[in-house]
Length: 103
Ligand SMILES: [Ca+2]
Ligand SMILES: [Ca+2]
Image (cartoon, rainbow, N blue to C red; front, side, top):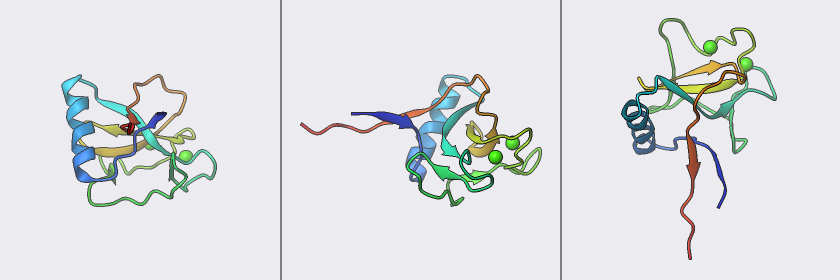
């Protein structure tokens, strides 16, 4: 029944999040990937190492991400579909994910 910061697990989920960001006119939002515990080793909220894939990649413009600028340990997904590290203390919207419960 719980929810957590979203971690898109396929292209369909990724597109759903990006389309939602566009729909509510947000530039970016936090998702469930971070390197809080071990700098440079990004993991999902499930504790699984994050490896960029064909649908979820680091941003390369205007500069290469992740850059850990001022110790950024949380990740935001932008509406252009790319990932950046960002300060966990930034006041931003977050995309959460909840699973259907089975009765
Ligand atoms: Ca970091
Ligand atoms: Ca960054």
